[in-house]
Amino acid sequence: MYVVGTVAEIGDLASVYQDLNVLFEVELADLEADPDFFATLENNQAFRVTDTAANLGSNNAQLSLATALVGDYQCNCRRGCSDTSNRSWCYYLQLGRHRRKLSG
Image 1 (tube, rainbow, N blue to C red):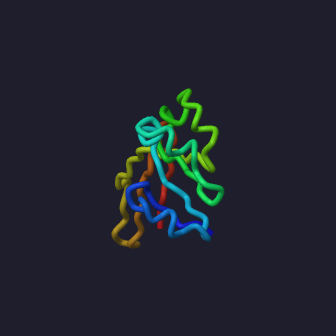
Image 2 (image 1 turned 60 degrees about the vertical axis):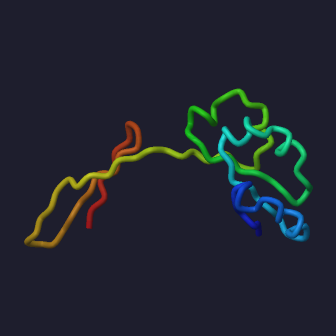
């Protein structure tokens, strides 16, 4: 189990959590802004990078130190059809080139 938050949220309280596991939620920009901070984490501290696929695919060496890399993708959802007599609905969820019909 982890205490999870951004560097700003956890801040100087990380030392208070010395008996707990701390997981910093960061973006690539955070790694680039303060690379020394992430290179010197305590044993009970880790970081997870959530960012776009382009940023996660960068050559930043600190990405390999992350506990996890999480892709943050833009997606679109639009109403595709409706049958009011049967009270059914459907939406199309599009993520990049992938499109999925959701209906009920």
